[in-house]
Length: 340
Image (cartoon, rainbow, N blue to C red; front, side, top):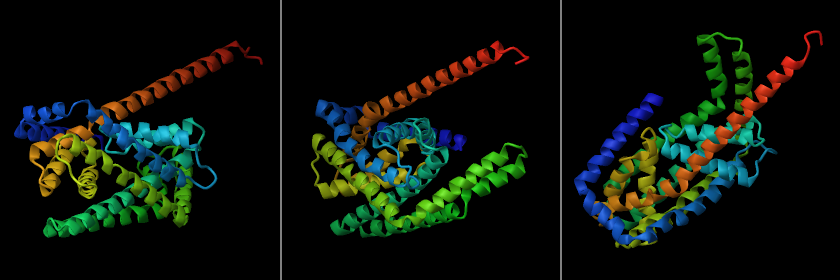
């Protein structure tokens, strides 16, 4: 998976460079510079979507073990930063979220089950978000053929989601641990298998809470809808005012295409190409669409980079503390006489 992520990163950066040179670096950056400091407001209007996303994740924790909102919020911020800035195929950030919650008091099995279900909730929200964008595209009657192709792609996405759900309900972690035990015999697999079965049990239990699951999907979808203001403001600041409805369609379809291409870290090149393709439907020039895509990436520096650095600080601090505790234990053992 790591190799695929690195290959995706290289392919994405190549596509990103080709699109940028094709449209002319000077022309694109002139649009950005001409807009000035107000572009720094874009991360501020994007930021509120993290609140419903956080509550959605808290809803899918096993009953009675919901973490504090602040802890979940910070974990989502850092996990998102890892997914955005590192070549981890959007999986590494989920691992970071689960690890942080265990460091802050949650049971490991609860955290693991929650991030697995949360990932499913996220995909379902993306599907709902895509359906909203397709509905607006059909309402605006811009390209009926594109509507049909988009619906076909959405159907394929839902088939994949259904398969993922069935695998989880069938005990995916238990089956993987059993396979691992057969391939690599070791005594440690017994403990791993026990934890895997517990995670499977918790996941199935969460899916039985259909009301909570539906609420989580709706909250995640709301978070995606709130991101519309970022694109709407970016277009206005870059001198191409569009309506909120058009901005919603632009954000929905481009974000869905970027999410589908999850093997390309941060959707480099994919996001830019999506903005150029969908932006053309709204009459936006390719250089302007590319500038909008780069403008919304400002949050990667203002919000995601600090999140990545904060996570590194926490991990470093935890490593230092663990080593100190281990050293104290060894020193204490060495001081005890053998006869004792």
